[in-house]
Length: 475
Image 1 (tube, helix red, strand yellow):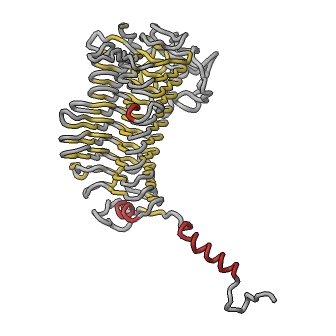
Image 2: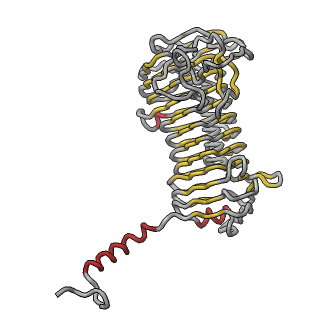
Image 3: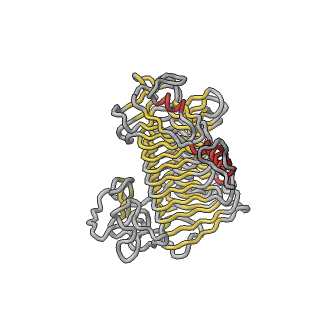
């Protein structure tokens, strides 16, 4: 006789199993919440005012989103310290980087604290806003993240980070004047500008713009005019200790007191299998007080694709005061302790100089160290001044005939190729890129072949040779 379920207090055994399974699954069915910020009052320290950014940051759970897209005010000024996020992962959405700025400056006074502190080990995602005037000052120990700190990964999209500083007064380093993350830093469609990392004598500033404890990504972004070090400094634009990718971006005008004015990829601290990729990008006008104003790489794999690395400077250059000499102000595999494999495709490296006037050009170097092996492969490159064993067919000694760094279209600044440049139609498009650094509608290959470098002369362009100053003295 069948068991009757309807009208009975008895429960069918299968029904009991289903109920138990649903009860066990219910904790995982809770969806992430959205916290709406509806006031530009920062909120007070502690829980903050309901509806404020500080209140949302304090009460949100991991995986939640804080929504500021409805704000009509332009500024949130912090007067009671950084906004602290304890969640493992959190997303912060603003109404646009030109529409909302979170600042540490209030009535002319800048607090000695950063803007955002993320203590979780997951991803701190910040989108569509600006942060400025963060000031991380430590009397003793490492000062990390002038404006943004993450104990995990900092991921920024459409964000401006500017006028921020990380300063250590004694027995520590300034790390990440703009952004610091223990894991990775990702910046997309963003600007990291005019930030500083510095420390007391005997220590140093590391990563004037960005300090990435592991990996780094810049895409469609600008990292410019940042400074590492008052007394000692490395990586004016970026310091990274894992793998890095710079794609369709410009790193320009950054300064390091010692080495790596633009990028300092200190890979040998982690793994020789790490890589640095510079693709469809420009590294220009960076400077170093000692060696390598442009890109300094320590070990691993280096990929230079359809990029322009020019006009970087260093006070010292080709011959240093250490056993590992031959340091170029443009690109150097300096201080390398492990093997370095460099692949270069359609990349232009030129007009990088060292020393006092008249400046001497030297563009690409390898360390003079018996234990270090540096190999090169690739094709269709222009490297004006180097003694490195670059790939066969590399154009040497020729002046590239570049225009100034400026807005030639697209999201980031580039160097145009003037008429009769030896780089026109002499490159390749081994990556099958659709666009040059500027993006649509600037085709990557326009003509009989791709141009060498990040900029592609379009067939319909009318080229005006204004602003060209010639090339430096060789060697």
